[in-house]
Structures are given as C-alpha cells and as structure tokens.
Image (cartoon, rainbow, N blue to C red):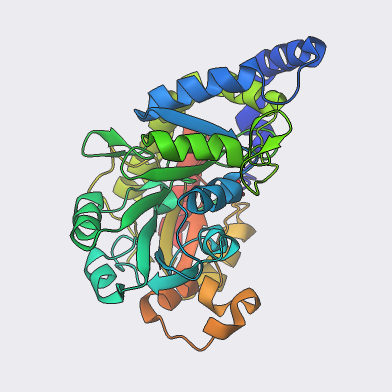
Length: 362
Ligand SMILES: *Cc1c(COP(=O)(O)O)cnc(C)c1O
C-alpha cells in the first residue's frame, strides 16, 4: 500500500466540481480583488469564529504582521512568542520592527507554558503572541490573566487551528486579535495563498482594512504606509465553497486521531495529549520517537509517508543568527524527536489500520 503524508489532489477531490463551477463564475464576473466573494467570506468566517470582524489578507504571515503593525507598539517593543512554533510566528514580529522573546513550551502539549511567560515579561513587553500548534488551543485563561495583570495585548497565531475550541469559544476569538492562514494544507485550505485576521476591536479592524490595501481607506488617499495584502476573489470563492464543510472535516480528523490514540500501543512512540480530543482540530498528529530517522525509514519502506513539523527551531535558524547561542532545551528536544503521521480527510479506514499495524510493529 502507498499512503502519502498528504495529497491535496485527493483531499480536494470532493470539492472539485463545485469549486470549478464557482471559480468559472468568478472568472466571468470580471471582478477579481476586494469584491463580493471576499465580503461574503469575511462575514461567514467572522460568524464561524464568533467575532465581529474577519479581514481577508494575502497569507498567514501577512495576517500576523499586519495585526502587529496595526497595534502601533513602539519600535523594538518586546513580544512574547512560543519558542516552539513555525517560523512565520517569529517573522511576523521581526517584520513589524518588534523583538520576539522566546518562551519554552510544556513538553506534554508542545504549547507555550503560561508559567514561563511571566518570567519573560520586562518593562518593554507589549504583547503575548501564542500559537495554537497542531490544532490545539493554548491555555488561554491563564495567558489572558497574566496579560491583564501586566497590561499586555494577547494575539493568536491560529494558522493551524480553524475551528478549534477552548472553553466553548473558537480559536480566533480568544484574544485581542488572531491571524489565520488558508495555505492549501491547512484545515481550511485555499488553492493558493490566503489569510485572514479576526478581532472584536473596532479601531484595530478599521486600521487593518486600510493597512491591507496600501494604507488607504478612500481611493488614492493614503493614511498609513500600508501593504498590498488582499485575498483574491478566486481564493475567497474556493473558501466559500469549503467553509461549510470545515466542521465535518474536523470531525473526520478527530475520528482518525481517536483511532491512533486508542490503537497505537508501542512503548517507543510517545503519543500527543488526550486532555481535549474533542476540542482540538488535529491539524497534525505528532508523535515523538527517540530515533526518528529509523522510524520514518521503517514506515517509508512500507509505503507510509511522514513529515517533520519542524526539524530545526526558529532560534537555531541562520535567519536568526543572533539567537543561535540561546539554549531552549524543551524546544530543541521537541524539534529533535517529532514525527507527523498522515492525518487528512482522504484517508480510508483500511489505510489507517495499515498505518497503525506498522507503527505497532516498529
Ligand atoms: C502556515 C502557518 C503560518 C503562515 O501561513 P502562510 O499562509 O504560509 O503565510 C503561520 N503560523 C503557523 C503556525 C502556520 O502553521
């Protein structure tokens, strides 16, 4: 059996006819940027997340960058970030002329550790930007409490958490503002780059609408030094087709996660946390293995594709040379041991059984 880690052709197959028809209509409409399709998506995704505003942008990195820019912190203010995240979280902070301050995760759930956040706060700290990594929400009650105590803003990198729930509220509604990505492989994926910002803050939203469109709120009048970061009508068309199926897709992911969690019994494999299976959206199913190259090779020999999210921590990347000497042992251990198993809406029961069989055999 051959099971790729992810085939976007396979996961998009069920939407293909609908999307092709709707995209043809958009092509024929003659309106390609900032039109009715995007407006519709912004209304529907805001409702889905339970927030007042959703503002479509070009991608997830822009969503986070513009969110931070719109917040108007003084240059070189410190923003607390998870050391264990995709590099886009960190890039957004440096793109906005702010300083990322890395905070270690808890080893049990890979998410930023609220207890460690407090030690990282200085007089220059302005905000905490958390990542709901792998589709699991951070401990937002504790994080929001700390923020309130020190008068800090809180933002979410929700690029892996479309539909994830924390205390009956959705990711994207748990802070002052959130950035989403609709990169094709995300739980809600476009067919090209796309992103969005969600917030309940009127003033922030108004500034973001302007910043994504060159800093302009009125044609040829520029209030800010803005960006060209607009979600195209074609991507909005595709997301309008797929959004109504997001909950069903997330349920499908949960079913696979539950099978892995209950049927994988191998002392060499450390499984992800099970404390909120029904609230998590399982963007990735990540296990830890001591000798991961051997494990990946074994699975590969049986036709099973895996991936690593992520092999090298942001602070160890050449892009951030000045932080290469930092020691963040929990983050580094995680980056050294993680392996992502196939988990997507194209997998069959038979394929999942096959994957579980070989993982238990390893
Ligand atoms: C995908 C992702 C991003 C960036 O999204 P793009 O649309 O690729 O710019 C940011 N943060 C996290 C955690 C992601 O997984």
